[in-house]
Length: 264
Image 1: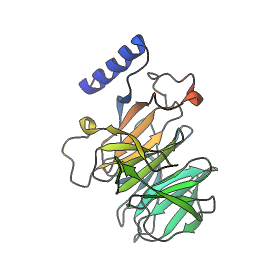
Image 2 (image 1 turned 135 degrees about the vertical axis):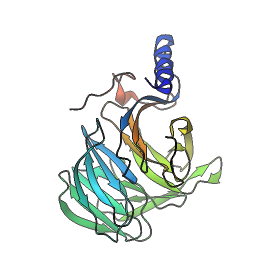
Image 3 (image 1 turned 90 degrees about the horizontal axis):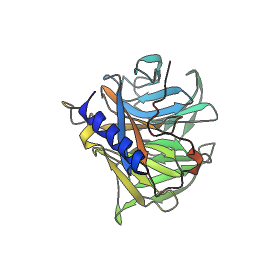
Image 4 (image 1 turned 90 degrees about the vertical axis):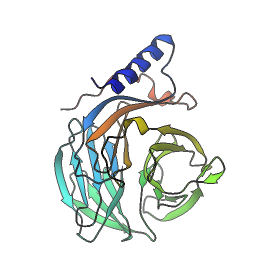
C-alpha cells in the first residue's frame, strides 16, 4: 500500500476511534485514470462516471469505468471545439465548450439531444438541484435556469480578495467546490455570498513528473458520499473523503468514512 494511503487511512481510523474523523481531505486510495485524458470535468450519476475531455482536436464526452478508469464509450466533439466542464440534470448531460459559446446536451448513453448557447467563455459547470452554476475563468460564478438563461451571479472572494481562475465545479452539500487553475487546492464556496469558506490542499497527492498544464481538475461526488478527484492527463483518480464538521451533513446520515464503493 502507498505510504500516503496508509497514513491517511490510519488518520481516519484513529479519528473514528477517538470521536469523529479529523476535518479536512483524506485520500483513501488511488484508482487508475487515462493519462491521455485532458480532464475538464468529472461527474457521477449513480454508479456511472462521465468525463469531459479538452484540447482542440481531442475533445470528447466519455463514460468511464469508475473502478479502473477505462473508457466505456466516447463521442468526439467537432474538431475545432475545446471541451470544458459538465454536469448532469434530469438524466441529461450538459457539457460546456471553452470559446464556442455552445453547451452540448447528451443522453446518459451519449446520444446528442441538442445545444444551449451562451456568451463568454465556458470553464466549469454544476447543478445545485435548482439551477446551473457556471464559471468562466474569472472570479464570478453565474447562475442559470433549467433552460440555461442567466439569472444572476456572485463574485467569489477569498480573505476579502477576488479569487479568479475558477475552473471545474461540483455542487454538493449546498456549497460549490471548485478547482482553481494552476493551484493544488479545491476551494469550497458559499453560493449565497461568494465567500470561500474552506480550502483543501492536495499538493502531497499530485503525481510526479507532470507538465505545467497537467494540473488538478476534476471533482465528482460518489453515491457513498466520498469523492473522486483527478487532473489533466493524470494517471490516477484519488478516492477521498472531505470531512467538514462545520457543515450540516445530516442528509448523509449512515455514511461510513471507510467504506469504499464497489464497482463492477
